[in-house]
Image 1: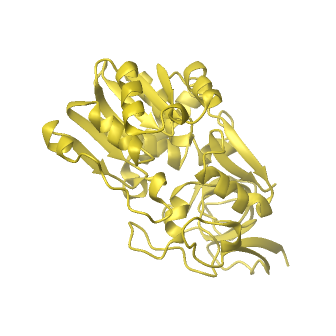
Image 2 (image 1 turned 90 degrees about the vertical axis):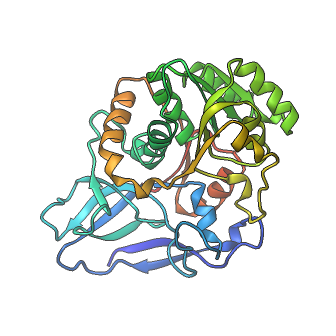
Length: 338
């Protein structure tokens, strides 16, 4: 029998998440039934949305059940198959969770997808050419819908979503402004990701300071904003929005520990006739093929050069995940399992 290391959600966070919320166990991989596929995971994706799932509260998705394998995107290799569509050796992307192996129903729509690694590295299918990249694409193309020459801003600018957003927005002729933490990330944003300006939020730690920085970076105001963070950064951006600006709300990482995030000046929504729309990318599967084709081309042609922070081994996942929530990662946070 094949041994499988797994990390479960053992208990729910009380405020800030901690490593003791998780528990590592060892199980045996069951024998495959007809139609099933056994995948050995090479990389595990760590993403901010997982923190919200750890809470037992009403949200857009069901809470992560206690005592079960933590949810998460994975890429890997088919090592056994009882499904005609999948062969041993196929490279695949799925939602295998925080474990070394997963048994997948090959007939379940969207659960397992073969990928081509000849021009795009396997790990990138968890980032730039995966869910985060499609998230950036949907928020930009379908909600912000920018015209050439408009100014768009994104928070968490050097993460997996933000870096894809920059390449997609530059391809549409936009002025692109990022917000990130620390001079090294801002340098990377400007020199490698193509941002016109990157603002270091650590140097602008309140609404007034951030608003002034945005005024300098966006002399013609802000036409579109992609929100990953919330809190005072959102308040500062709204102060600089133009009439009829569009805001795509993807994440609110500042509030994932459970405290509400009040908006300082909601009257700006009316004054500037803002369009504010939250979205969950898994509810828009119809756009994935178009988005993935553009993202794959950007990576293959070198117009999108995503960075990755890679933790080694499944046991490192909890600490790496908590570091992600505090912005310690550089680019896409992954765990290497093979």
